[in-house]
Image (tube, rainbow, N blue to C red; front, top):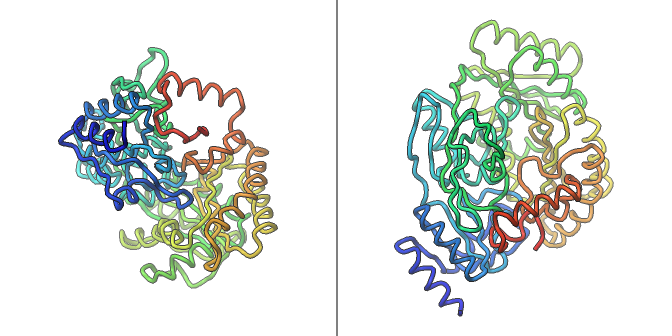
Length: 464
């Protein structure tokens, strides 16, 4: 069957849903935030119902055509890139909130619901959806589930996995499964829901999700502290963790913050320039807790760990302090960064970062290197910026050559080559640094059970 005939058959199958084939749509929907792969999809389909998703999967099985899920396309691992003639299945038209249950503290939604939409809906009901990150205004719930998204609140609330009460999924065979049925307690064998969380669409597509909500936090307050060096960040974390129930603990280098300040839309937190900064957040629900935070700050200064600091006194100041951290990824995207998203247990972070920093300094002496991350949960973001005059492919090739040493160090510390961005295509060749050969074989066997024809997001997590 010709390509045109395939598209005509698909169009008739899913009508009145849209099938797009114009060059602008193929370019837009065929990629995510990564810039390493050229998008080359067959077409884009925007289903509006579960039945249409099932029809698409059955069509793809008949013709052995790969399917790539597309949400907000904010991913950083090329898991949503269609570069080999796959059909992109965009869920942006399946964007409805189907039910809100304040008794169970749950929301039933379709996969195309925007993360911030869910956060705002929870707030309207006096509740809270705590999974949060810089792309919350454009990322979608289905994509969050597919990558087990983390973000800035993991230290208190955990990953997306913690907030999925139930799922409806269409498998690679086209079967519709209802997983866990939103239960808090369910001891009836394998929890298949957990397999689909973080699977990057390689087992099937999420078509409906029931997300848990939490009570709304009271008087969230942020502090930005300037540290004398990176080694001082960890004792600061221990000091505050011992006194307060933190909702976030982030870090960033001065070089990272300088990129944000250069935008001109957020002020510096204070005049003192420090090599590293910690941003922490807590609920100042009483004057006693606020005073405890100030006392802990003074202790950190006395110990020589902190040079300066500021605590938010208003909602606007709270937002401005968070912008210093949250705007980093978007700001540096214009510099075509080479990203590594790595993690170890929190206690190993200082020694781990020193070793990685030494590797980077030795092999990237002429490149600008930026560090930031969710240090409260052991997640570090290593970003190397492309020199303006350097060819993009030459830059990526240069960076990739050092990945072996970086990931050998990750393996040495029993860490992860991808803490929250997923494997996709950018990390698939390095999976063995975090997973044993036996684990990988079991993972492939799981995929074969749900997707025997290999049509679900082919080439992601595992090579073709």
